[in-house]
Amino acid sequence: MKILIAEDDATTRKLLRKTVEKWGHEVVEAQDGAEALAMLVQSGAKFMIVDWNMPGVDGIELCRRVRCLDEMGYVYIVLVTINDSKEDVILALESGADDHVSKPFDRKELRARVRAGERILELERALRAENDGLKSKNEQLEELVSIDPLMDIGNRRGLFKAIEKAHHRYSRYGEEYGVVMCDIDHFKTYNDSYGHLAGDRALRAVADAMKGILRVSDEIFRFGGEELVLLTPKQEPKGVTFFAERLRNAVEQVGIAHEKSARGVLTVSCGATVTSGTDVSSKWEDVLQRADRALYLAKASGRNAVRYRGNEAGAGGVPPTDPAAARGKAPAASM
Ligand SMILES: [Mg+2]
Image (cartoon, rainbow, N blue to C red; front, side):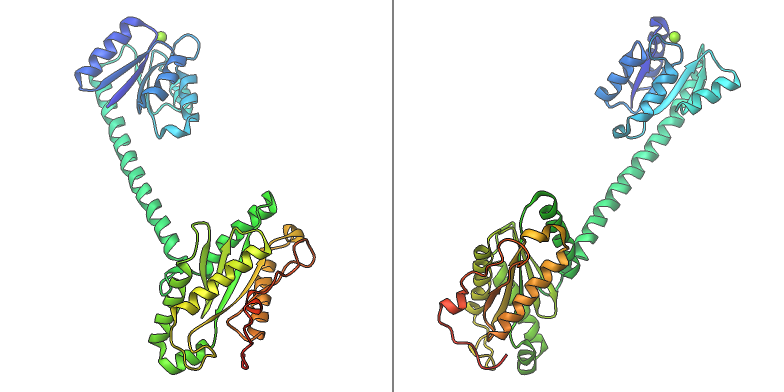
């Protein structure tokens, strides 16, 4: 173990060093409290033997200062002192010393006290390691509870956490974000026709198709049932609409047979929006709801379509050209 000895008297310091080294410890020396503090941080020692009476920063003050260094982990301090009245011992302990030894020190006693401190430090190290292990397990757990196991993407809980952060960044730093809400068209009839296992496979395939076109900064979540929500840092109505159109197209291109759908394959409808204007002072729930309304419009237009809805109360509310309309796609008869 590395032991830092803080002692202003050279003879005592030398004696302490030799004694402690004989027990197999590595020694770092300081001549006063200020030097000891600097060397403690530098050496990373966890055990200190400290003289009470030193010029400048004395042993008591040193104890107090060490207890203020919270990035160090626990440092065990034995105060060596000629001041060993009951009041002095109380003052030493209250200042942060763990133990005290009277001066001139008795080797056997000092050795026993060093061992006691060593045991406590070992225990502290073990607890810390266990704690770190628990922390990392907690993080893993936290991640797991935010994932939808079937689609292997974030779940509703994950979405709420992510959109809350995104909205905070928007309100606070003006970083706009886009939301695309997607719903698989005629999914109930798909399940009825092909069975729920096929339905599960289709859900996974839809998520995979969308994941295939995402950038690292985009996030995808299962909102529930056959609904997905995507968060993207895109800032323009046109950009987020184009992004939604790519998502819609990616799903159509997979070509999952769905005989009761207008196109003969499984498709999605998408509602898109971006933050602007008064969104700064409103809640993320309002942004999500706008994407939901846009999705409703996409459904109403005949499905397998993208609709955009901006924040009319703010800038950027003008809907861009609808890509489905631009392709000249006739709306399907049923909704
Ligand atoms: Mg002294």
